Figure 1 (cartoon, one colour):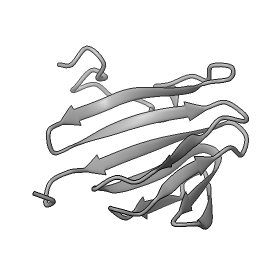
Figure 2 (cartoon, rainbow, N blue to C red; figure 1 turned 120 degrees about the vertical axis):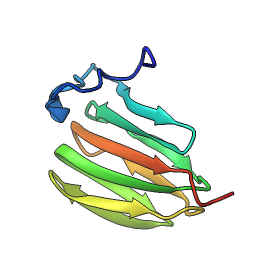
Figure 3 (cartoon, rainbow, N blue to C red; figure 1 turned 60 degrees about the horizontal axis):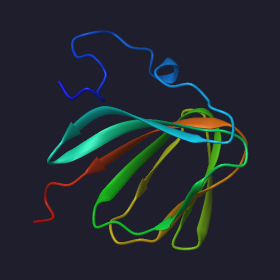
Figure 4 (tube, rainbow, N blue to C red; figure 1 turned 90 degrees about the horizontal axis):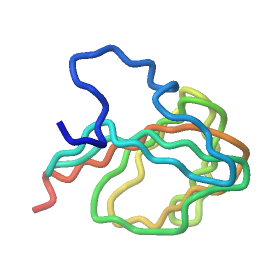
Length: 112
């Protein structure tokens, strides 16, 4: 097991895997493989992610609060329980919108 991954074969409450840290974005790896990874992230108020483009599809699910995900200039407001797929090769960023937590899943296979 990767030291940064959570324990396998054990039940977890996803929203409790990660805590908020003042003025920070915190990322915890749930699972990391060569074909992709799953991470849980917490964002304090006023924190976001800068614009980027990746060669892989990315699945984002908000598990607490609300988040604004901007994909190729189009704003998408996600509430707790909602999700969106960020297509490969599309510019995207997470715009600050209060405290929230989300799961991010990146699938790398199929792009060889």
